[in-house]
Length: 355
Ligand code: PEP
Ligand code: MN
Image 1: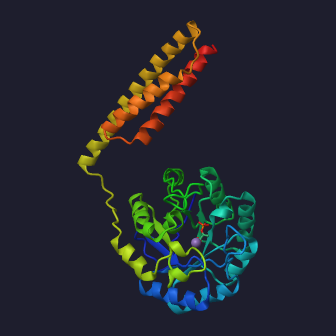
Image 2: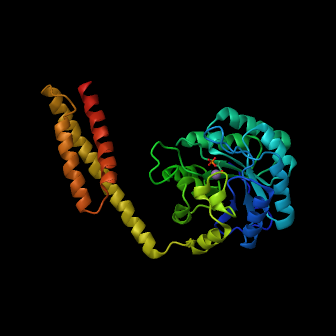
Image 3: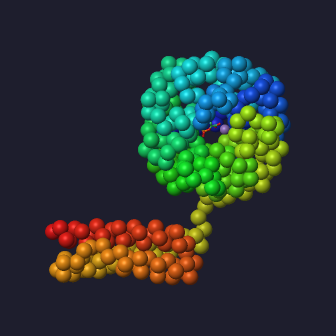
């Protein structure tokens, strides 16, 4: 993809690029108070939801069009850029009419190719040039996320960024939305020049998770953060548990450690060489294990034995997991590795059996 910089005039290219503001625009006073407090802390881009996708009917579904005039006032009086979520053609037409600077597509929209196509077509009509930011779809499907990004690209938009806001799951023990970091990491590998933002507010769903999640995003080299901030979070009309005051936001941002050293030292080169060598050994050992597994497959075939012997597998799993833990590796990790190896062994043995 041939992308252009999303940096608007006056925005520094230093990591992290910050977008902050309330989950929803509620009243003109709440919008203006929050925006002024954020501007005083040096925040340059203000977010606020005007139309809110709510899980159940009856919740606050957004203030709608009157809120767009409040965003214009934020621009006029604070000099900040403003960003809002769009989900339909009308949202786009209105936002562009009211000079919203940045549009983002929510997780419940990027999941739907029909909605994404409608948005793409509307963007083309308005000649809006971006930035457009695309949140990951609610389900952990990287191709769907990339498809949504491509539809925006196909509308002629070149200022595009992705927002990682986590993935829905039934189990909401720690996170509101599971981070599944490997998905945004793979996105970054496939489209290296696409700026990547983290949305720690919607991943964590709790104030106390904003700082650690933001640090994690920085350590994974994300370009920016979009964080929900409200002048009085406890009274917020939506997502009150995850919003922080501009003061707390500024405190958290000041504590972030930004590791930006790019040059590779001799020591790192040597360590990387060791990793390469170890990986080669690992491959050789795995290949050896698969060879032995095939011989066992041959033996099972000749002696009319079934491929899967669960007692033996349980034994192997239990022993290896406790060994791995003694060696300082997580049991969960080792279980994933052993299961993958076992699955491949079974596949090879089934092949032999059916030859
Ligand atoms: C939001 O940013 O307020 C929002 C609704 O986010 P998401 O689409 O990630 O749920
Ligand atoms: Mn929200």
